[in-house]
Image 1: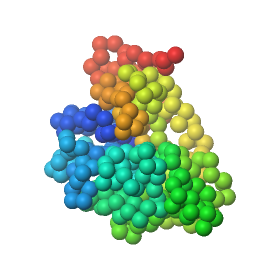
Image 2: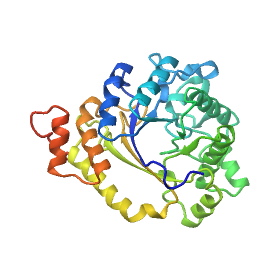
Image 3: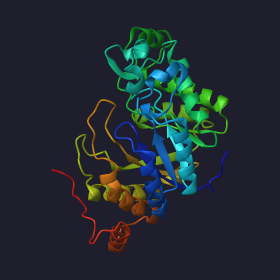
Image 4: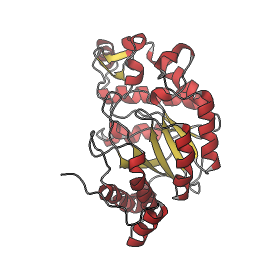
Length: 331
């Protein structure tokens, strides 16, 4: 178990499920991120990972090669950035379930977004995907299992029967799957710390969450928070509303100053930057046009404030002849 003195991170989320950058772009990007205070990358591969063997069919035709993953790590290490892979394991599973080979594992046959947690082929599939990603991330300390926005759960006859027999709610079914994956990972990869999104648990009864996390504190022993620098204000957005995102970070700073001491370990913040809202959605703001917003938000996150001097500093560092325009929120 790590202690409270461990490094607090500022992670940049690289969402590769739309317009994934080439490695040459990362070569230019990573030094900039590091210079503005980023300490790590949260890499959501989706179908851009070089899956092989029984799951080779889920790999995109233009997916990165194994050597690209190694080079990404080298570039990150050279710029003092840790790498945290993010692999969805429940919802947002379209990149897997859209394929006919995996159609039977859908929770609802006509929707490919969520898997059926009681299907006998679900866990072997997910564990195989995770194992291949871990294999190319041998020295990484963290692994993100996603688990957000599971829109369909407990809908298929198999799940409904399981819930009836075991007197389970849909929340119980969600937690049973998440911890099945988490416990397997802790057994197979004891040096990995597992991360997941929290939104599916926000409306669960407090006593249920307390009981669960008292039991599973060995799996989830710390907390992260997540802000956004793009991809959070509209699925067809072209430019990020910079002032909105700056305000979001300032609000997080205020919240953390009041509440983070309640948690055993505060690990840091992930600045998310979604490329599209799901696998089939249109692209929202692309990474290059969001770079000014990202650097300004990093400045806020690392200095816990935003002043005119900060605005000038970031603008000048990025080569603007004037202050970056703080694009307002669209109305």
